[in-house]
Amino acid sequence: DGVFWLAIQEGDWYDLGHRAGAWDIEGGYQWKNLWAKPWLRIGYFQGSGDPNPGDTLHETFFQILPTGRQYAFFPLYNMMNNRDLFTEAIFKPWKPLTLRTDWHLLALDKRGDRLYGGSGAGQEKGGIFGYFGRNSFGKSGVGNLLDLSVAYDITSHLNVSTYYGHLFGGSVLEKIYPAGHNANFFFAEISLKL
Image (cartoon, rainbow, N blue to C red; front, top):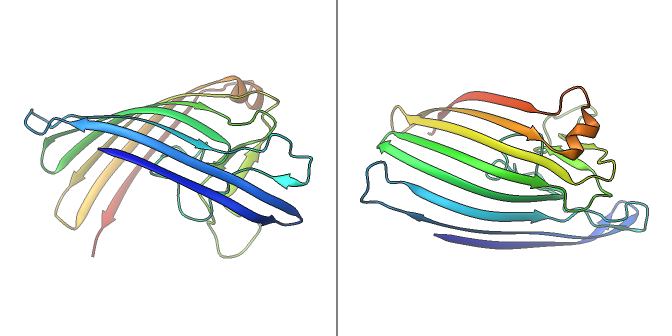
């Protein structure tokens, strides 16, 4: 399989001009005749950052409202000011069960911009928009993320899944969280398709 996409944004960002973009390229191969149908994939994603936040042009790619979950299960980072080199392996030992493991080498696109996280608007009222931005301190290394997800289809309409990720924090997170720059994230969910 193969995927390539490109997004270009141009217009206004409040009082600033806005010019940003993102692109992704991925490829993989699945051995359908082997046990567990192993599917190995590799890809690279880049969402632009702003090299000079003090000028009159905003160049950080804005992940509008859709979730970046396809690329970032771990909400510490998202598609803004991000470079993500990743590999993934997907296995289906039997039809209702899917196992997936990923490795992400994460870095900021521009050192002068922020580390952005979150996944979009999350509440109807109040001051929380759903994204956060943390100072990068002129660093670019976000870290290495290893994760594992398990999904089980109970029926054709009901799915149970879990996710665990461990982030080995890089130079950006060492500055933001000097007492401990590694992180863990776990969730379990039930999905009902009507």
